[in-house]
Image (tube, rainbow, N blue to C red; front, side):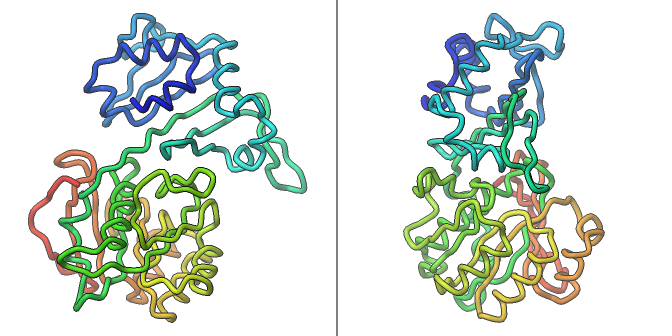
Length: 319
């Protein structure tokens, strides 16, 4: 596990995590810490509870509950002993820390003028461990190009099937360039600080030397800002869905900028139920549709379709 993450944990939790088997630590996706509830570990499609001995159990009653003082210590460590310094992050409901890891926060929301101002009485934390898998996008690159031009592409994936990891590596590969494509000017709208994992303006993940990042900015506004200010070849954004996202994507295409983005779903039927996505599909915006799944592990590229929904690949390969 990342030493920085361990350093933010109170001593007892840190020691228990260190006792976990190495294969679990390498595949760990989330650590969920809740008041008066056992600490939950999520890896792959498995959920287990941490025990006092550093082992795991399926039974909540046998799990280890973090003492209240220990939870408060962890909140202090995350905020560097100044919870007020995290006002903006608390308003969004998460904090991005060194390494690009994201810590979700729940508790009592304080509302001001109809908007969340901050969160008080923190009752739970979700440590989402960011993993960088360089090279996972390489098998996809030949399908996304036409005469050196990057095609507008939509990645369709159920939750936790590797779409963010794939988007991150696509940004890196397209930014560096390779034998298939020359290096491109890539712009990322990183609304939830997951793709690049910026901390203090510095990306914690390698997204390439020609990549510009607009961090913690809503997608629609971010796309428009990048078109005006950065003259990108490609814009990458995660999880579109709002009507304004659709309009911004149309503006990007009108400006000659390619778009690679993603949406939650497991089939075309799923995403066609969403008016915004259905409209984009009906307008022929996307030239490639990439479906991810878990048939051969997290991030398996299950199917690739062209704009006519003709299948381009016949073999699923793990991402």
